[in-house]
Length: 66
Image (cartoon, one colour):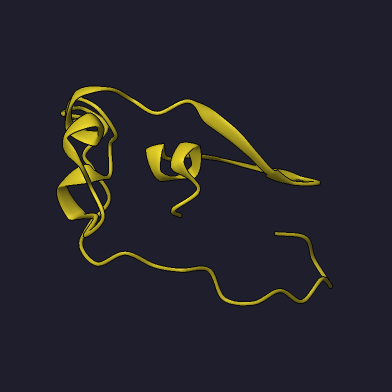
């Protein structure tokens, strides 16, 4: 976020962020993501450019489903 720049509210998934000392295998958010698939549980996703100043790491972006 940048000061003085208004943006829409970010999508929020329920639950608590993962414990950095005990990260799950695969995507760190798969235990609380309602769209998680088998690959999410096994492999961390690559980063995808989502705009001028941003990126996201999600297997659904590879499929165009996010």
